Length: 256
Image (cartoon, rainbow, N blue to C red):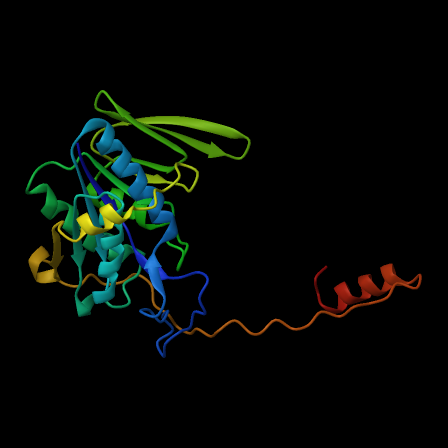
């Protein structure tokens, strides 16, 4: 079984994030492997441990995005591919999906890819658009938001939680699956795994290597500004007229 797991290098959610002059998130300060992609790596590695095969970690981003696939290698991926090109700066989800699709297709030249696995979302944008866009471009059946994932008899099976209900879905391989943070508990790589990851192959590809021009983004940032500082709340002591004063505040604030 050959699995491609897509990962992303994102600003740490615990860090102070900022915007550049073009309204894009400033990267390269406290960036880490997207936390939700750790579940995707764990799912891919666990399947290969069960069925045999290879896990290829794939990312697109600037030079320091290499750290994301290196982390995936430490978690058990067998090889990594980093697509990096200055022309890709500022790409949106659809443009990113086009590049990743081209990379998967190049990997398919070395042998079939049975499964593409992604996280449920990237914590910098939280659009959750990439899995669907990537599946469409690769013409693969998509099973998204999986809380459980198994493969058997040439089919992938997932369980998806929807409120108080659950769906069990299957699709023939090859397919694309996105997993949630409920799918597993990502492993923490031991020192031996960290050392072994240094010897695993990591290829860096440009757009020229993929035979692609820079895909046009379908969205444009018109304006962006930091979120204003939160103002201190007003404390009102209730002396019998608290309800009336609250109603007046809601009306004045046009909240009702």
